[in-house]
Length: 119
Image 1 (cartoon, rainbow, N blue to C red):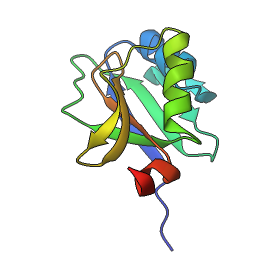
Image 2 (image 1 turned 135 degrees about the vertical axis):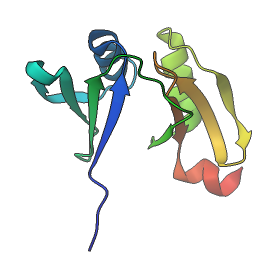
Image 3 (image 1 turned 180 degrees about the vertical axis):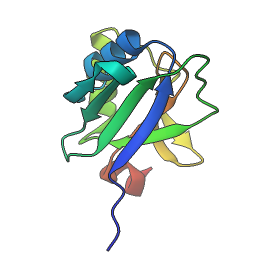
């Protein structure tokens, strides 16, 4: 068996990125390593994303998909609290959902099972 469990994303400003990933997406801080300017964040299933500050960090077009219960409802709730999206939920090459970008330009896409089947 093999399971994807951790991902490291280089970021240009750790404090700014940490705040965006926790405040915007709701990921939880698992632990921090001040000496290496790294924070480990977890989703509700325990998948870990390491944000590590690196000078000159760029996203290179990397995209991450997060499954939510209801794309349209999540989009409406997040928009109401001021989250800026690159586009509204829509049919795209990968399915249906909205897209947003973190401070370094990493693409974050939201999807749900129902709209993937229906739209």
